[in-house]
Image (cartoon, rainbow, N blue to C red; front, side, top):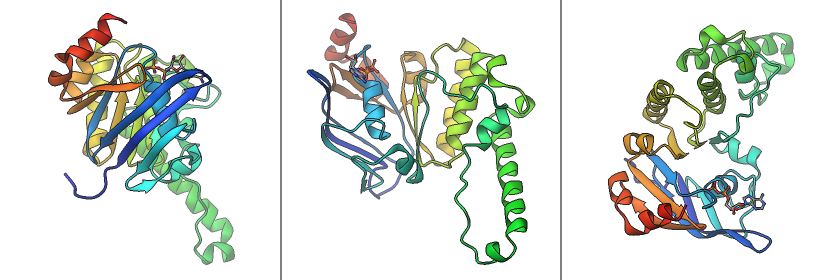
Length: 255
Ligand code: ADP
């Protein structure tokens, strides 16, 4: 869909935890506009890969580039400014804030540099807060969360909480969204809604990479799937290609 550099390029990345090689020479390239699935047995390194790409862990070897820019070693905050957002396997919502405030705190608050801000700063601050409030409302509406705006997340069904987390990740207007097991704990209807949400995110121009155990979801959502086992990529291709791959069958049988 585009001829520029890939949105994400992981080259020969390794990650060691003392003696353990959690990642060993992992390479993958994700093009703008893709929905990429990352699958593999438990302990194969999927979350570690996300942690390296999003700057939570520092790779022991290899390079990561975001839209052609080398970002190895960059901190999570810096990566979010460069257009990367992620969710976590275990929800990380603020329990004491309302749904709307959970989204509001994630919105970009970089101060404007406009000169009149210093002359008329109370007006400027008021206008900015109003703009952020409006954007939070837009995000809530987009993800079907308007009716829960004033509710605390903990009192809501798990599927809704997952949606709040995605809305919050989207608050920074990312170019690349990493979702760590977004369907975990969801029922059939919630998984169907999740698939629609992920497609709408991709259709809005955001590339999505998701770790997922729900193979039905991976098959219906992803154009390409990367399979990890033992910290290495053992297969990559369309969902239909990888499920029939002998190495993949072997890896899952041993799980
Ligand atoms: P997956 O997400 O595919 O289930 P992980 O990336 O969580 O796999 O884990 C890969 C391997 O790295 C596992 O053996 C796990 O125990 C190990 N590991 C992950 N994070 C750490 C850590 N912070 N410290 C030590 N070992 C870790």
